Length: 121
Image (cartoon, rainbow, N blue to C red; front, top):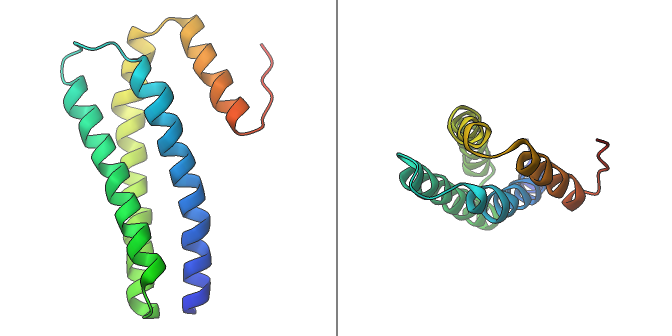
């Protein structure tokens, strides 16, 4: 894959990841009640991963070697897969247990609104 294509793919992934991280930080993280066992550590780890994704994306933007850029992009994709698995297993499960159905619906509607999607109840 040529360097320009790696950079374009990185830009697309960056747009998705940063929107996701912002929504997650602003909506989900702040909706979960403090005091849940292990919650603070999990949230700190997730925020740390968001920061690491930003760092990798910044490095990727400046990379001039196609092989190194592809390696960075593949590392970022794998890291994102692992991050999503932890979200599904831990954060979303916790949210289902501790948030009301009404609050979950509100969060879902806000996520959709931010992405220009409509929801029907």
